[in-house]
Length: 116
Image (cartoon, rainbow, N blue to C red; front, side, top):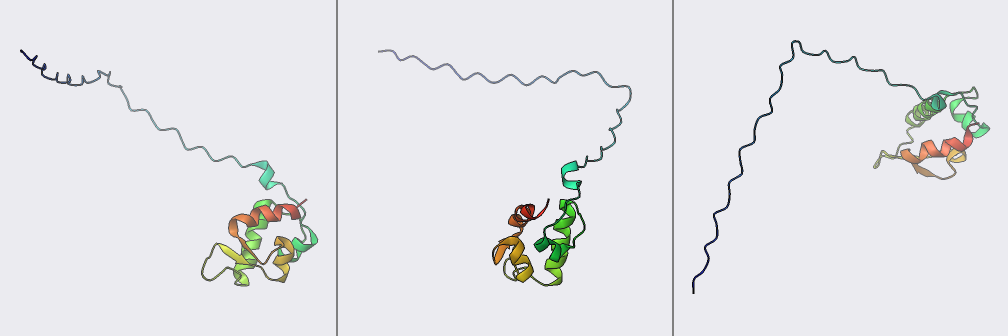
């Protein structure tokens, strides 16, 4: 009984280096483009009476409303001490949010109902 010998494994051929033409001059990097502003966020909207008690009655862009809310929250120390992502609503904010505590991620969604 003759047993067949296994053929030795073939070695992989070394990778060939790609031949490239050398560029006569290095290309200059294009200047960074400035990020375009989304017009929907920048449109001034009138806040409801409940929201106006916190941010003022004049029309503001959504981004400005959020900034003004954060100014109010920090001024009145309404961030939760243990979890800074939570906001403890006082009487004015409770009218806007509809509950005693919200996360900072919920806040932007909840104020949308108060802007027109």
